[in-house]
Image 1 (cartoon, rainbow, N blue to C red):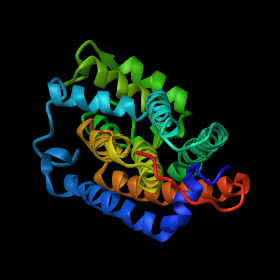
Image 2: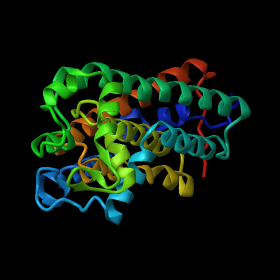
Image 3: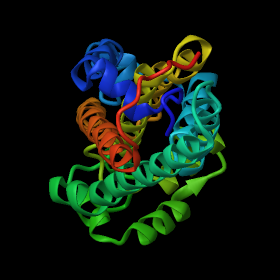
Length: 283
């Protein structure tokens, strides 16, 4: 890499890892604080009264946000942001290629690895039932207690809930078709929230990269991940598929994993980097 070229690794070395993470914290910590809203706003708490009308517009918006926090949504957002990152001025073709490859690998390790660990180890170990399942049990719609429901495999749970659906929802619980189908699909244990884990991991990781190496509109494109992640987390309680504690634990774990991903990117990029160069910040 020539001395006129910029790289994420050289930018971080110039600024210092601690400074980058401190600036990232100025965005991520207030965002995490907003995840406390369901503990103080009854409408955002599945156990509170009144809940959102699941036939209304707000749950539809929440469903769209939840879908954006699924694998396909995150992949699409990540691809767009990678283009913004690697087309910044001042980076050589070699640097762009290496950064894109490292970002993709680390993103897969943190996001997919975190999902596997959460779904197959952490959630079953904690064993908390989702609020919508508890509600169906209390109303007599579920036809069994929640403990027995979670003894079934994930696919069998979805098939079982599918048989309980009506055109308008579940029994006396009316909801939009999208919300009903979301309840059928999301049948893993509740704690911690996988959507919160993924969205906060993604936001923390990418915002750290942006603060290290971008400025102007490019940085702002990445910073939009912060309100997006908060909205994804809050969508889980609006849809009544997670408790407030679930999103707090998932979001907190996501911040830790996101910082770990950022540090991993720095370590890997430095292995590919030529002798230290003076960084030229992209605009």
